[in-house]
Length: 262
Ligand code: SF4
Ligand code: SF4
Image (cartoon, rainbow, N blue to C red; front, side):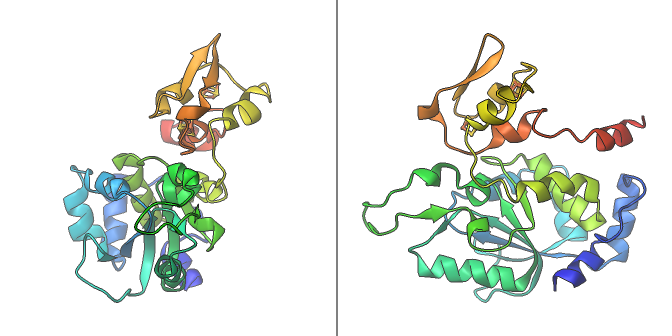
């Protein structure tokens, strides 16, 4: 199945140029529409809401480029069909048999499994779950979905922006591997923390004091002190977005040059 999807998406061969909007539309017209599913595990539906906030392109995306074939809040269907791309929102509870089965069924039925949002990608604030609450006091262990199944792409964010969701879907349709590469790399970034900035950036003498991390943090867990990020760990929800947004965690120079025509 994965081989078929990769062929369908042109993933075996790198496109020479970044496709123009017209070329993307042409590719979408010529190819069958990808079947996309939205799977809701232990999430808040915020990632799904962010998807629907693509006001500019949502209508053409839904009517011309993709088919949403599954999703408890979007499609009236109980049986999970085969899908090309599955957007999985939420972490998975190890004590919830239904969620575990659903996740494994997604892996069997989807060509590409996407950890959609930080709960699915890194666990996010469900990392703090420890059970003991009614009506399911035994539900205590929540993990990113990559701890259970192979994940192909991760889009961290709490929630991810509407733009990055739309661009990722279009890049997948177009086989734009340059755009997808960071998301493939992030599929292994499951133990996120604001402290990553200290260990992986400041300690490595990579920080340039730009403040992007502090701006990206939605809980204001980071402040800039003497030009370097300082973490208030009590506010950190482990979404990972500060490290993902930091320009010294990865810097796609080739892609930027290509987009700017340099
Ligand atoms: S985003 Fe990265 S480089 Fe910029 S201040 Fe934060 S840690 Fe330093
Ligand atoms: S410091 Fe902020 S952005 Fe970074 S992981 Fe914690 S909550 Fe997320």
